[in-house]
Length: 287
Image 1 (cartoon, rainbow, N blue to C red):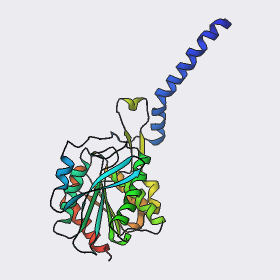
Image 2 (cartoon, one colour):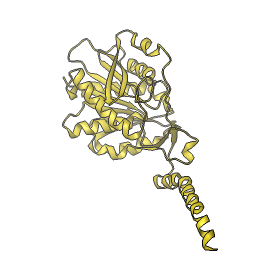
Image 3 (cartoon, rainbow, N blue to C red):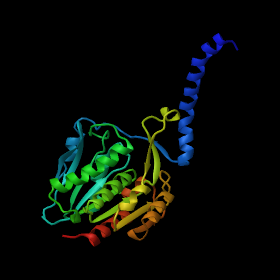
Image 4 (spheres, rainbow, N blue to C red):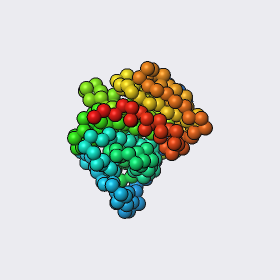
């Protein structure tokens, strides 16, 4: 090859190398992380008026918290009558209707109990601002927890955290960080929580762009007891092995229970699961 040919081919070879690296990098990274379940972020805006309708349900009201400049999360709150009542903060999963699902689950959980109830839509979900990522949601969870304590004038000992699916990652980060600051909440209950998964903004682009890795286990070192870990044996979204891994990492800090024949979203409506969470809250409630 002549010197002139080499000069002509050099830029093309460089571009080709970059292209190959771009295409293969996600595959290499996925080999490093192992075979992970992969999902697109289910960010769908609420239809006009839907947020208002949820807030008009008996005893419920709107609430919001600013988690970053220009990023506000919208939520729903149901305040208790008693000044010393327990509060439940719910961290939802990767759901197109986080507020709807969260409000419904919290009402089922509390039933006739006089508990404070709270759920916020993650950034980018429902009517909340911003774009989700593993790092952003992890930081947001802590900001939300601290904002709830301040806004409702709660001691951490009156706050119980419940989390579903992707929310387990967010909750673990928030609860652990609060504990490091000597602000341990009364309890943490997880339902079908994620141990490890990849979240992408586009399944098509995921072939050339690595998504966000949600890895809960490294966050568990700082999570204090008591923790309830529930997972369905028929969960085809996040296999029951994920719940087992979370429980194993927590060790004696956690109570682990598998729900036979219960699927991923079914756990939010399963009476055995809800009864177990109620028992955890009532047993660890402190005034």
